[in-house]
Length: 222
Image 1 (cartoon, one colour):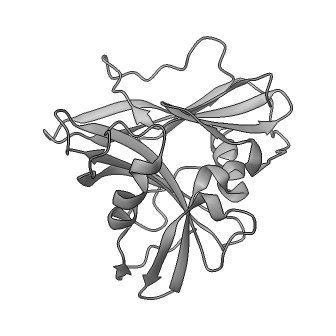
Image 2 (tube, rainbow, N blue to C red):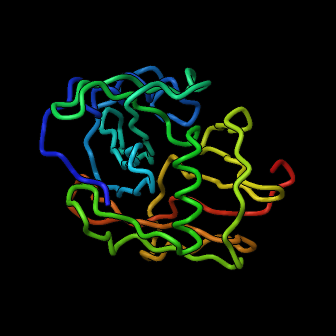
Image 3 (cartoon, rainbow, N blue to C red):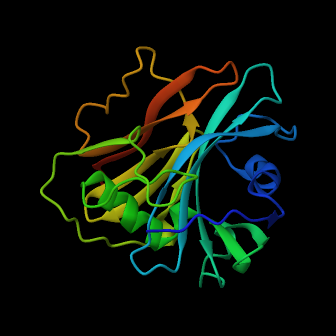
């Protein structure tokens, strides 16, 4: 299990994301600088214990209405080969030293572990407490698994609402970057989906919202 260190980060994750988010095609904020608050998320474990994996929900209150974004990050002790375009930034960690933070959709460790979560082979972990499952994260899978992952960072594609990640022949993960709260509190995957992950986060008014975070589906691109 990943160990959560109670220490300092410079710059902070929110400072990194404030600079990075406006460069994304799915950022719903025109040219203004985001005003971000952490709203939720969870962690996944790297079986090799080398890569930190965190799925973060941040809420931007800089505009006329709050907008929540799903931002999965991986943290590495050295640069990830061939992933310069996916680098969010570097941080100095009070315990681990310099850490390279990446948009996790371009990191094979995250993609493999997210698929394992969907297939029920691993469990989501609490964002802030070591060795503690996150019970608000739910998943489903209609396949038999495990799916052999065939991942290429060059095939990952962003659009104005999310990120498409081919994971195997005929299969892709769709990450919902701009989160829309399910009106009845039930985040139901679309018809024909092979699997999904849903989770919850806190709204600025203190209420809890729930939405689909990622959907596994068939794709002619994968």
